Image (cartoon, rainbow, N blue to C red; front, side):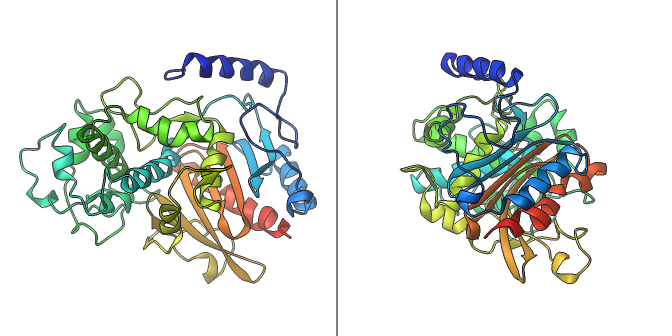
Length: 381
């Protein structure tokens, strides 16, 4: 279990035993002592009928490759279902959904004065890597990394290219591989989804923390974000290597991912504690940069579903037309179908994990938008 403390390890092992007995596999969420208040669909203003129909469709194989489905509203857990060998306590891959967590951590660091949006990245990267020639990268800022607008010649959304991450992961010096990407755009002018942006954002944050005598990135992640949420059982990406992989690779519990989503619908608060600055959450919710990617293009035939999503500080923004109005979804995505979806207008959070890995299964990864459109959002009273 990698980074788990003795306390976390004990809780995780206890949870595995409970999971083996079938805990959490029904509609009513199991109480696993993770500080999630539990309620019912009806009590929180959701029609149980459509949600029951959704769960039946998953059970019957109408949606495939789903490993978990978690639903919360008004800060209360309403549905927490697991499939196959997965249980409430089993850690699941998050893939690039962790990028959105890195975006929140960056906001905390900016609020505390460790980083600024307009800070140039090169001096921060230079603490760990000095490129032979980076004249074309001097203008890249922290904001550019957050917005996926660094200018790197890299485009990793399905169907786009060049895809750089796989080759970089095999290189002898991963940091040099990420920062050494060629440039194709002026920084700050064009959105191109590229994991190197978030990886380098993590490096920049680590460098800033060292400069302020905070020597451990993981300690900062734990103390400022995860521990206040009661998240102790997880494994970070890149654990044991020189730098944590803040762009992906972590393993977490779906219920903990739902806490991340809850921060977006509660102004950065968890229970009675302000975890992420309210101003940073508000900044994430305003219209982000335009992208060339639509998450709903194949959902229903019509121009309203072909609109591209926006992107703001490591979170996608997708407007979904439901009941004659647009409903804004703010979501993180990871390959395989790892989604953290916040619906601020409805104080609603939905998390799915899945095993639909690879771009050939992208349609299966997008199933969550069909779930939201046909079942979950129409159930809101």
